[in-house]
Structure formats: structure tokens, C-alpha cells
Image (tube, one colour):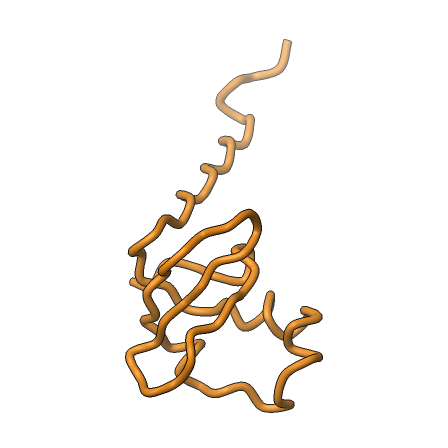
Length: 84
């Protein structure tokens, strides 16, 4: 019988991001995406530093507004992470 103390604990599922959350872009997830390939070769640093406000969540995408005079952007939710 296996020892239960030796079993690795289950990973906690990250909390889902909701409207109004402060977010930033996960660089590793973004760099390997089709969105990065369709955008400027060098993305602006502020998207990785955050915070941006998550305005709307529709399916797998979220609309983010940055605290700068730039347009809102739609990004896949798996590319976003909570800004600490």
C-alpha cells in the first residue's frame, strides 16, 4: 500500500479572471501566439508590466484597457495573468 504522505499535493487551479481584474500579459504565452505574429515585432513593455483593467470577458477572449492613451485590446484569456 503506497504511503499517502509521499504523494505530491494536487496543484491548485488558478482563480479565473473576472471583469474589473487588474491584469498583465504573460510574455511566454503571448510570444508563442498567433496574436504576436500578427502584431508589431516588438510589443510594448507596458503590456507585460501592467496593470491593465479587464473590461469584458467573452468566451476565450478578454478586452483590456491600459492606463495609457492607447486603444483597448482583445487578448486570449490564457495570455493574461493577475497583476500583483
